[in-house]
Image (cartoon, rainbow, N blue to C red):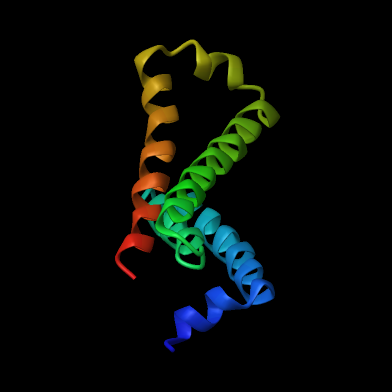
Length: 109
């Protein structure tokens, strides 16, 4: 049994890795957009099935989008950001797509 299989077998380790992967992924996404891919991969790797890995990556994308929206609201610029049209759609699509693509890493391992 490999290390990753041992991680997936123990639910405590799996949830711990998921929490740490989420924090690390959000930290990396704060500095560079590739952090969305890495974060999606980190939350997708400990899941039991590839489908759950993809869903975990999508969930990471949703979480990062919510954090970004919260930061915009905190600074009072959410209404300006929502009124930007196509750029807003792009800002919504990028975390969702990259998180999901990162979650596809579960299918490789």
